[in-house]
Length: 216
Ligand SMILES: N[C@@H](CCC(=O)N[C@@H](CS(=O)(=O)O)C(=O)NCC(=O)O)C(=O)O
Image 1: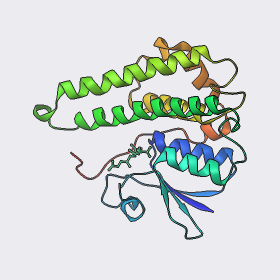
Image 2: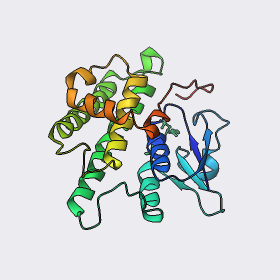
Image 3: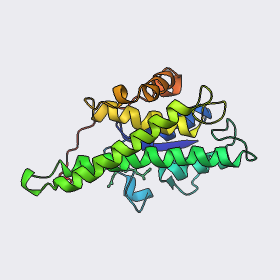
Image 4: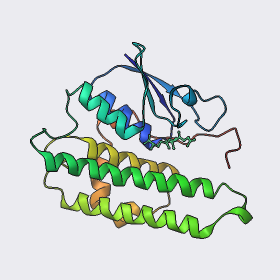
């Protein structure tokens, strides 16, 4: 059915792995280090990033995690990961939560690589700017977790917002284990703990990877 190019710590790829599992779509996991010269991402994605979803019927590869999820929802609507089409505001809210979750990941990645530079080449103002986005994003997620009406962040079933939020919080736990988000946002921590017990989350827990090639 599919091959998914993924990386062990990737919060973006984890979203897709969870969605494929929730939709019971079989796939082969191809785990790579996208910064190593051995990566196959450039063969499928001009932006050279994973995740990349490769249909095994030869149709074009699908890339950019939020687009992959939109593509999956359109092509394979069962099990839905968004509220019904007549729930427009709820659908848009779920996508907004994903925007913030992914934006936190983007800022974390930028800060991570800035810190990989030689100390004298690192820009502290740039790192501070990225971490400010992380803190602001986490506060928004914390607020939404506190305000949720039911068991899930949007609507009455597991959805895109839950998947995106658990993916970024799992990434924090993996790459920034000393960060105080869990203490600062107990409702967010409680929500993620609940999600992490679901099989599709348990089976996709992130782990660090080692990069061989020099990146910055
Ligand atoms: N916006 C993209 C971001 C994907 C991304 O940054 N992927 C990283 C890997 S990871 O950070 O998710 O582990 C990558 O392939 N980076 C390679 C590069 O930026 O050259 C998405 O949501 O798919």
